[in-house]
Image (cartoon, rainbow, N blue to C red):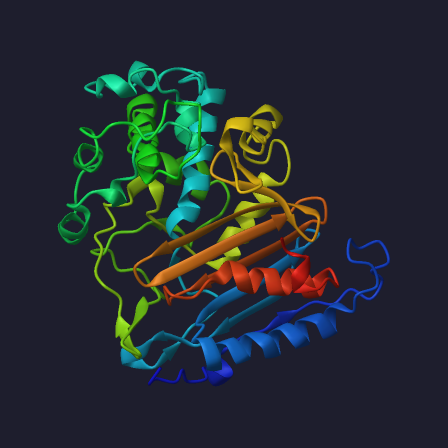
Length: 373
């Protein structure tokens, strides 16, 4: 590649809180300070060699133990990223949509085992018996709207949720509902529409009132290009070996499947809210969210409600999700039994932040990367 990222110098902020007495920690006698020194050096090498730019946060036992920003947030102003920079989190938004559905179920506005036709009208005949649960777990068989030949055009002009589902409404189901698994953004568009219909609020209003505001996620929200959002990172892509501004996408397109912006600290607040019964969701709702559903198995992992449940990395239970949209990529990884959370947000869409998360986890757990299956 022809470009080289610049250091953001003193504007970068690192937070390393080392607890000396860590005999009870999940990763034994690991010296955290040395771990994060190594990881900081590794991430710096990723900036230089793989063009990483973004923010990284690690939390352990409910406390932030490492937090730092890397690379440039806005090339045209030569402005560095900060730990308060706001990034599009893309499909990480699905966790929030799933939580909205569960909150509405707790309030008896819906039931996840009901057919979606109970809440939405005008659906294709083949969709009538699909359940809310099947949308949440990607087991509905509804095709992903990204497969439509119209997607490239419409993502620049914007669309309503109804227009988005019409992109695939005339296509056959990929499989009979509940018999297989296939990732479908269309399903989460439908979930957003169900939230609209059952809450008497718009999706973004319900999200703000019931999740973002109560959790103190003041630096997160529904992404619209027209809004002035302070410290919003600019998104970039690589083309023919050169850095470019990312292709435009109207954020009405991903809607409830991927329309949220956030910061690493806000996502850590989100992580902590999901870690205990009653902070946001009831115990019964958390159980539904993090259950390993047989029909939602894929490549040795399971998809819960807006979360991938895996036991393939270091032999540990892991809840995670990644995201990618023009100019941005994201990852949140939570090892619940170890009380470790790793958040990586990037404003470069070719970067794979989940691989950086794996590298950090391997160091924390004193495991080789080869332990990831």
